[in-house]
Amino acid sequence: MALIEARELTKLYRMGDETVHALDGVSFSIPDRDYCAIVGPSGSGKSTLMNILGGLDTPTSGVITIAANDIGQMNDDDLAVFRNQTIGFVFQSFNLLPRLTALENVELPMIYGGVLPKERKERAAELLERVGLGQRMGHRPTQLSGGQQQRVAIARALAGQPKLILADEPTGALDTNTGVEIMALFRQLNREGATIVIVTHDHEVAAQTRRTIEMRDGHIVSDNLNEGKTRHDANV
Image 1 (cartoon, rainbow, N blue to C red):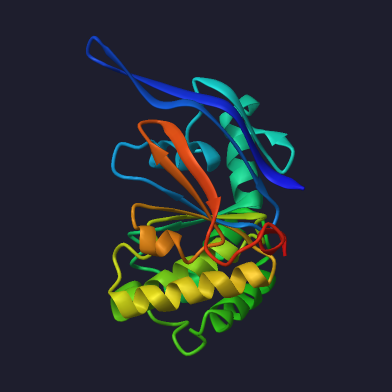
Image 2: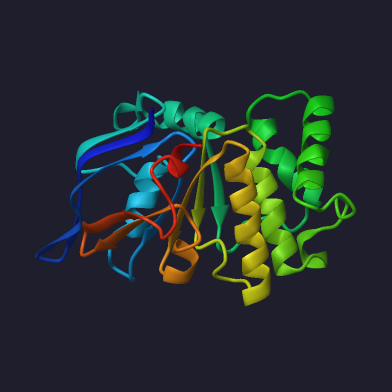
């Protein structure tokens, strides 16, 4: 069953007298429990596509449905609720609040989701244990390494029990070894049932997923299973 369905997505921007086609008729589907990379150089349209997948932007035309919801037809309030309940975000720059502890950062989405204090603290602690930071719950971001901060960000992304995790250049600010550890964590989360879409310019990162969608100039130029993977792999 497809978790994401995109049909003929376009996104146009005006730059002076010129119209830029950031997306130009993009169509694809992503099954539930897939592990997919969207790859391309700067200006390819991959970041625009991620913003649309995350409900942070709307297409000029076309249809995007996630978990059977046409998010292009939602108003801002409905989109905010949908994002909180359905999508977990992981960013290159971590986006942790510096004055909050790791535990408090992971609690944030649950506060917005109306989860009661006792339950959210317990769940935040459980998630930090899950990503290997059980001994760092009281640390603030400045007291953590880049890899540890990204693990906090992943735990935060999981806090709302999302159907979809969107990761924007999740290893871009990390050294090579730490990046390998983070990708291993994504693989484990996918094996446990998470649907993960990684947006990256790095083909080596993309090759570690099950499927790579390559973009160039607002178009999908290839959509392939990675070496050694089968379509069955992309759905288990």
